[in-house]
Image 1 (cartoon, helix red, strand yellow):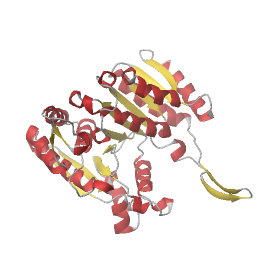
Image 2 (cartoon, one colour):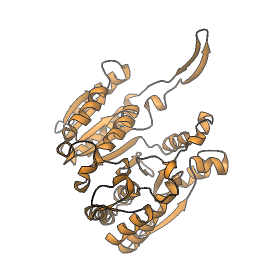
Image 3 (tube, rainbow, N blue to C red):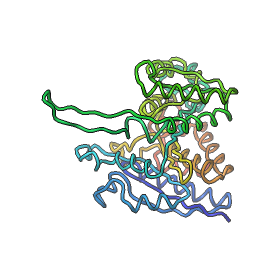
Image 4 (cartoon, helix red, strand yellow):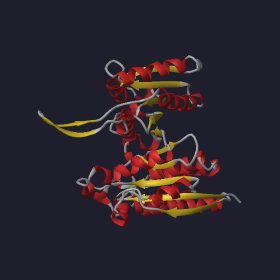
Length: 357
């Protein structure tokens, strides 16, 4: 019987609640499909700061590197916002991505038929939306140097550097192109090549590699137009390829097409080594401990983990089918509630998903 070693990072806010639900589901489904999972929980973010004075302890990094996959919930809390930048929860997450070499962030955005009415857009605009945002994750303005704050004769100045090498660009292009080949063979690359030198290099590399993959339909949009088109006509998109900053913005915008950011999973991958699987949403400290959290995004992230990292395809399919069944039965967490539906808390939603499997 296969055994998979999974590191759980519950993090902050609602993180421990949705982690508990997801772990119980994974324990059940592993028995049903005849494989074992060994879980280890480690701190990250605010919880790690409280324990170790660091948002990413070395013990957490070590455990993640030695795992088959990492499943994280959420990090962050406003009470840490006044800490020095290197001590904040978000820095821990950025350093984890860098430590594991997680350069490719994959965010599927699918509108479930039973949730069409939950979207803020008209049903005819979102029905059938099924796209993937492929975001470069370890380069760009979040990691570029020099960066910092300085005093000048004119006052205080802050600066960040947006930088990419051709190697960094090429490897994320190749990921997007491979994903597109298994879908509708359409890729839209998003940049700001009319203004930014770094985007001009990005576009040149996309066009060069597109010549070697002529079975694909590759197009380009500037980031401002892409943000508009994603709301105006989301069904035009299939695979969106973009840089770190632009992908951060577009993927959260795309999340709202589904009606709730609480529905969206993601995977962050490297060329080798364990990937990181996490819901797109934040830690929602305002509802932490109130049993109001929606665990579905983390549950779907675990399905991505089963499919991509562990190759447990049948178990991944079963989870996704259970989510669809529960939603079709009108069961909803508070963020998804609509007329004629039954509201469930986080724990009961987890039980409903297990029953559906």
